[in-house]
Image (cartoon, chains in turn purple, brown):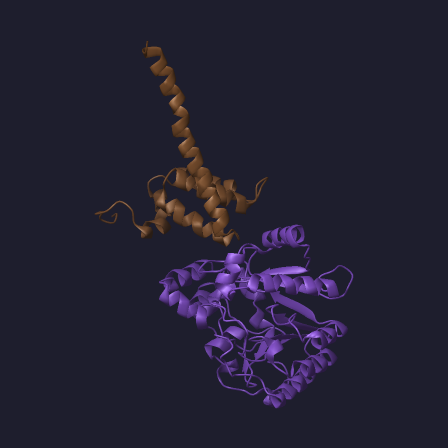
Length: 310
Length: 114
């Protein structure tokens, strides 16, 4: 297998930033689930959580950077007690704010105020819903998660998310339950739309299919199951030069729970900082400049396999 | 030079399938183009066709095809329950095909017997 950098140069490609439109904020590695594919190794045992000072610095950066989108992720962002303040600040700073959710916390008891804030501020919810098969979902995310996720989707639909004309966007994220690539996005969206409506009366706006990055807990599983080399070969074999232009790292900057910046959430997981040196969000005058080089490694094949990563 | 053979099946041979073009490139091209067209979305979806291919792979007992279409079915979003049912369909047709020949046996036995 050739390195990702070699694959780029063999195709006369140079991976550099375009205009950075999205600020992705990782609120920490604390999560109520222990997903086997998690590239960050998030879980209930993790203590890395963004504190209020850092969060305020991130919100200041969202204003200073003039970002079009703020994408809030984790871990489970709902487990960070300061999330409502970040939502308030970011919805004032950026026209679009997205919250990534595993569905089982957002809609649990005691989240009514958060849901009301998200509804009032028109925050898009991007929800993990990896499969229509309960056994695949639970093999990946743990026992009881399928039913919990369905309950979450139904509640979000009741409030208005994913319902036409509500202005409340609900998107689903599908990723494979193993060492194989995800289904073609449009076909999967058609199938999920039909089956979720038919079986459970659930509706949504868009569906995104994503490959699993060979990092963190998923990398550990690939190695222990003897799938690592085959999976890396598969990702590399699927290298699509046309996907490079649209890679998320060209238009996104990711800030970790401790305020340090990365080209993307996968580089964050791999510990490869933005521009090769640790920079704190408070030190950044604005978005990373257009034309800046993007740090790459073998996991970058995740985003160039097939039609690419959204 | 081909790899020396001391056994019949090797998983590493599956990705070497395109080497079959070496002696007959035009025929191989026709086959692979046709295969791609057959498996593309049409009146049946690619996902459904992969389940049929998985069932057929079991019926013809091709380990290469079983590996290839197990992975393809998973990548198309099918789950183990659907894939297992597909294998049962193949098994039913194979078993049924054997059993229905029993009528031939009965016809012949009837002809020969008093």
